[in-house]
Length: 92
Image 1 (cartoon, helix red, strand yellow):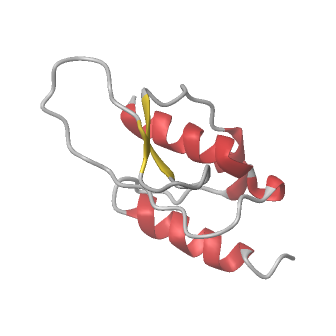
Image 2 (cartoon, helix red, strand yellow; image 1 turned 135 degrees about the horizontal axis):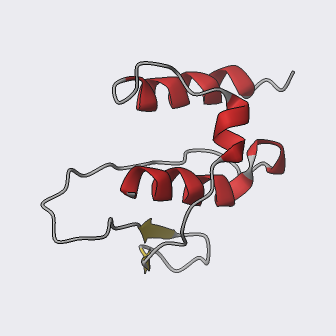
Image 3 (cartoon, one colour; image 1 turned 45 degrees about the vertical axis):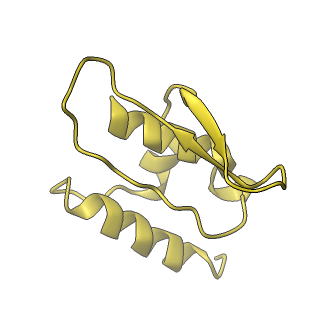
């Protein structure tokens, strides 16, 4: 088992636990699909320094969710595509 798995799982459960009665499993997380971001916003000069904006359809008002990725992009856990999928699912 990867040493980061418990940390990732704890963060995911913490982030989603308040919005869902049932915690999401890693398999459910990896199975998510979603749209691409509507905007990419640079906050520095390095190519990796950016934030992405996912907006729900409609006129709102909508609540705001901020997803912060604080580690490396690991293919084993879905990489950046899974953050897209998670953000897209929350914005849907």
